[in-house]
Amino acid sequence: MALTVAQLVFGIYLLFVLLVGVYAARFTEHTPADFYIADRSTGTVVLGLTLVATVLSAFTVFGIGATATGTGLGAFSFLALAAVFYTLVFGTVGATLYEIGAAADVVTPSEYVRERYESPGLGVLYLAVTGIFMISLIAGQLIGGGIALDTLLGIRYLDAILLMAVFMAVYIHIAGYRGVVWSDAIQSTVLFSVLAGVTVYVMFGLDSETIASEAAAATPGLFEMVGPVGAWTPLAVITAALAFTIGVPGYPHTIQRYFSAANEKIMRRSGFLFAIVAIPIYLFGAVLGVWSVGVIPEPPNPDYVIPLFVETLFNPLVFGLVMAGATAAIMSTADSVALTMSSMVSRDVYREFFAPAASEEREVRVAQALLLAVIVVALGLAWLRPAGIFDLIAFAVVGFATTSAPVFLGAYWGGGTAAGGVASLVFGPGITILFFLEYIPASYTFGMHYGFVGVLVAYGIFVAVSLLTRTPTVDARETFGRSFW
Amino acid sequence: MPTGSVGQRVASMSPATVKYLVAGLVLVMFVLAVGHLYVIPGLTSRAFGLPLWVYVEVVVVAVLLVIAWIVVQLITSRREAVN
Image 1 (cartoon, rainbow over the protein chains, first blue to last red):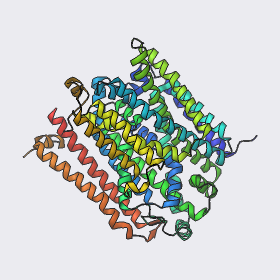
Image 2: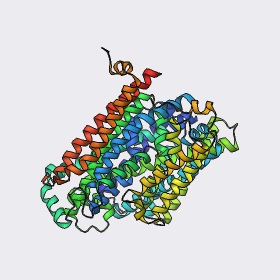
Image 3: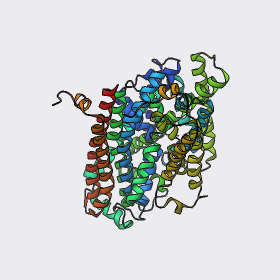
Image 4: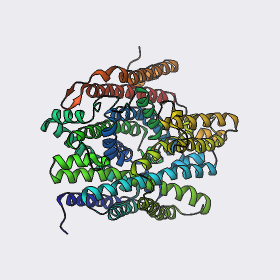
């Protein structure tokens, strides 16, 4: 069967990413510090770009387009505001966690939780709760990529998810964190360049005003901030932004990036680099989404309006690049999550409970084996497709937000306790899941984003239960906590 | 009068001054972030296929980023002065 131009471009891209991983493997050592966080040597550009690649996912390329198509450009408002707020968290909490990690030799988020609260059980609970969301996130990425490659490039769904999983597994397995962040840097650059190129070309090279007019005629209200269905009220925008502000910097794979910075200044700067790169990407995604309504008023699958828009207006080479950019967003999120999860299980379950005397190399070997297991489980879920891509990803993103209280508050508040952490990790995600599954009516959010309600519950319960229970030793609080000022 | 780098100037401020400064800037950020959502939706005429409110919002977001940078620098300089 002859390859199409788009398939060829996509194939070359995958091969290129693999070669980056092979090259990175030359520098990778089999110690936890090196394999999990590149021996705390990540510089500003790579750290900023890996934050971009990790945070932006299938949701960015496909989800924003689909959301903008249905609810208008207001999606950009909340994502842009959230990205600004992330910089405050990256520059304060991120820098503090970097400092604690470097001083106390912490390399995984669950290790931090365990040591901070002197509670191996809390460390495992943190891993278990975030693990549910991490597996959902990887599976959601694979499903999104699989359907897109099947629908748009004619690569069968099963072949597509296997292809992505195998490429990802190989370069993480051989190169660890260094392979992930180097490929992430390339992937975010590709994503930014492709979306920027397409947006600028439509804006100035094509008749963007006619495209926009036809889109506005097809869906009245599409270009208003509140959108055609009134989704983006100021309250909805600001609460969604605040929920994401807690969620995204609280991803376990984001927290692991804090530990990987070469120094505090790099951590702070990379947070701002993230915003400078990510905000335009959010804008391009939302803009292409609303414009697509003017070109494809009734798309066969609204989830893929951006690639369909590009396929309609551009030549196959550009279409192939967009698909490469989309796959880049998918793989760069999934690879980060897979490595973080496998490193947490190896270090905080295998080594902590089963083989405390295991060598560092042995721990990394176990992490490599677990990495394959994590990817296989996610592949199985992606094969079964228990829910749609966006359902799984939305479930994961808001879920992570509700797991961050023991980490973020623990870094600054000496009064935080293990019991508070347990209560927060049970009730915060629990409430969020009940909202998500609609067991609790949406009316109980009172107009706020349901993820924000989950965050309020998680943080409120953490503080309340902590105030009623015994704090860890002074040593643990001083070693794993810092003053905000 | 304090001289030298921003870090030195912040170090010479009292902790309370820095806290009030940071709190004030965060308040400004929040007011700007929320306030513009009420002010700019009326800008619906389009240029290059995009409504004017999007262009204004991009500027607002850029201003917010600058303020965020100042806030982070203030907190960092204060922490470094204490440590």
